[in-house]
Length: 623
Image (cartoon, rainbow, N blue to C red; front, side):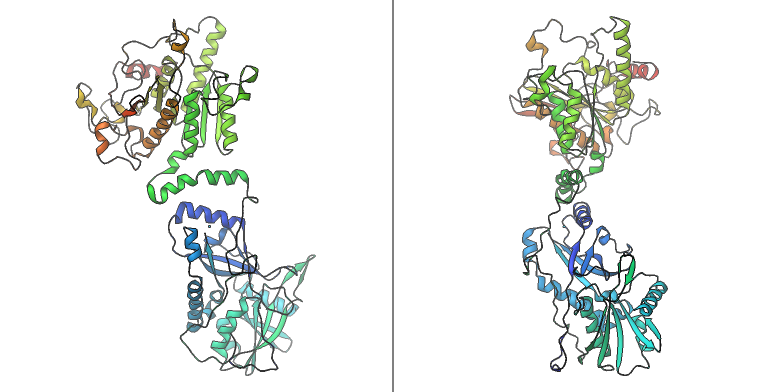
């Protein structure tokens, strides 16, 4: 502020503005707040920063914001003064550009002015140091000052009163000014915690305080002596000699309800009144940056499209992929797209020259020298794509019906070890994907998973057809035959017919083998090459792999999880049971007609994989 007329013998007081210093941690915290909490909310948010009066000479007066800026109850760093502010975080660049900066500044100035008029600034001087952030994310005095800070249980005070009594320096809080200066008649002395290092100019915090002084004391005092208190440590010694003292003539301010004109927007790097750009990519850990970025699309889903989406259930799930071929590679990539962090591969094959064009986790170099093991190469490639994923690979065989292993004690012992390893892997994972080439290779994992009550997602390919299904999730072991899982209606297993396709709970759904009339055997015996290999249209595996993952996610989003009632084709016009839509039992696709159907089938009580007799035996004996 300035008086209407000025004594020619007095020099004009100028101030050094703050230079904003926003820590990398602040931007990271703002990003997390924006993604997880604020989302589309543009309402102003309270934040806090601090400034310090002990910087070395040559440094600008800094207003610092750190990761703790969003926690208004967080302690201020030692020997620093707090500053409270308001964050305006816009959703679009256009909103950022068109924001009324003048209006925002006037609103902040009005708040300061009200605190001056009401006297609240005397009780809490921090109110004088307000800021806005618009984003698109002397030994005697030393001892007296330290004693006052200790009494108030703080390490720094933004403003304080000073009085000299013979050889003693007394200091006090602003709210005690009436008693403290009751014997003063012409001049008072105030101290300001000054972040500026300029030899002849004070820092920005003094501006609003002088408005307070003029408003409250100009009728009693003509001059105010100002001590800009600067306190730094150099070579282990405390130094306050660079503090400056000067007098300010207070203009007489007639009481006015209107706020004085305000200034204060910080200039950009070019010295103009424009936004400041910050590029954090070079100063952040690339792995942490990648981890934050890969979740961006998922977090954006929760803003507007699917606000009830529970991402934690998906991200935390542990997935076991049995098969690292065409289906396994595409399932793994889709799982990573959903943010799944724990993926394990099991396969015993090596990468051949025909694989890389259809299996996106492999390259030509992986085929050289006889080929790398698929499971190990797939896990290694996932970690190269995204270092934050916990990917493992196991190069092992899965014993299959119709494929003898009792050729020798060595092969028999190896088969036992493979079964034990498979059981341990299934036990330690939440969702099991069956993605192998042959039907019989899926039998043993299906039996083990059923006995351990694990969610199984199965995907199989024909030439232009596919099936993606979830196996029925058996009731917990502690429940008896008459008990029901969650709150589902009873469906009689004795009733046959199309009526069974409605309202079948998850624990009564069939598995991949429930429609078989014979036990699985060697499906490759006496078959030509085109019959032994899975010959399918190239795009089929990508479709089936994506649907397998989407089915898993839909199941996880249902309140009943794997026990969810199965949706059928008849439910397509009904209200979906989850925020993501239907939760089918099976998805059978026909690429020649570009059509999908959603059949539902009951579990077969004599199924070779999931019937009670089979998994009761697997509970009691080694498979």
